[in-house]
Length: 186
Image (tube, rainbow, N blue to C red; front, side):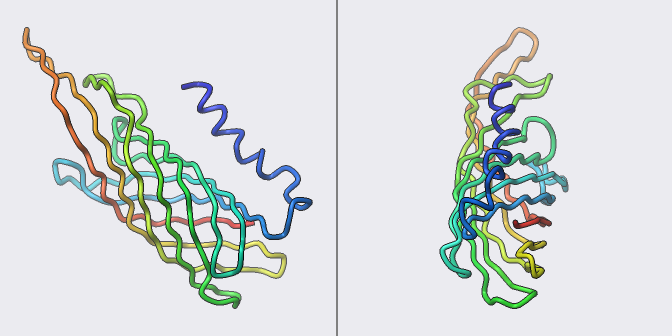
């Protein structure tokens, strides 16, 4: 797990080094935001999202890339590392550009909390379509704001212990959240 975290931290640097010499068609994006929804007990929860992505700008209306991130949905058992493919594009070429963005991938579930035992917890499918606005400047840098719907599926076995009784039970969670992100595209 420590190796995975180190790789995740160094990944943006690998794409950023030499970016100017590779091509003007290459893009990088960093996004930070929140996800808002309810948990399995219908209690309102606010989570955190952090994303880094890079890809190729085929034309203004079509950019394809890949990304990695961190999503905390409400408390520690619901923290995921999603790895995803993305497709995005701008609807026009003005200073303020409406855009679409879709992420499709797989989210790996992180460590369980202290009071519950989970076995076989690989994670599940991840999906997030969104729409937003991009504010560009003359140098090609942009600030973006987008609103989306985030879905994270997870299947795992849960180990219940009560006095001398122990049993395993399959459990499925689907985190469905509205999400708002602010980002930088360079």
